[in-house]
Image 1 (cartoon, rainbow, N blue to C red):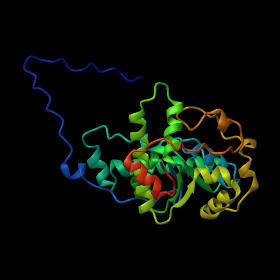
Image 2: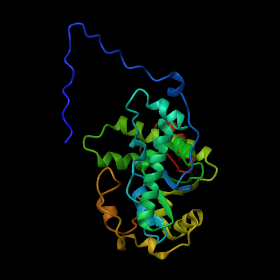
Image 3: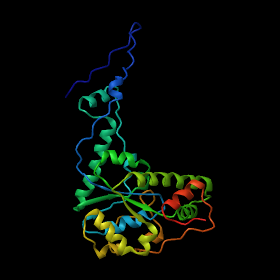
Image 4: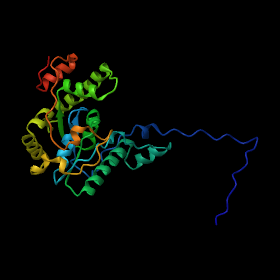
Length: 277
């Protein structure tokens, strides 16, 4: 058994320990190049909250070759360099904190895909929309499905969902998502655009287009998502309403024509092909 060693006694004349040195500026500001990815071409659904992303997820997850799990919230999964010298150590390995996080995100996707035994993985976390440029940096070969919904209908859905809704905050939240979606729509040449209204009105046509984009054959079982196990529907992991739990694709709620949108949100809605008051 190893003998316990008592710590040295402090003396009145002990010299104070020096402060920890800060990491060299070169190490702290170093930007690593991307490393190889285990999953080279994941699919990300970019959308606002309350836009039907959970419905799209379970439809895709009903495909025999597509794994679309609950919201994974990769953007909140971080790496912490806990010592002053860690950044320099990672720089010597041609890594930095951002790239370490990207490696971790990639590993999470790869593990989930391997466990499923399927070929394609889809992440439909709505807040991914707010960081889509970083996703694009992490996975240069990623594919994107832009799921649009009339902003007025999104506002109405959020207002109904929340107790004592702050109407100004809701409009600001919807505008924030809409701005990033429009930015992605203008920037991502390979993105596939779907509207929630079309998905619910013509599910076979829309899902056939999705399958062609993803590179898998269309399967009728996708339209019967209620026959498959998609995990528990719960808060923070996607929609958990009675509508999604019904197992049936139901008509989209239309926007209130009397609802007045902020000028910029009105402009974006029109750019997406929606009519506004």
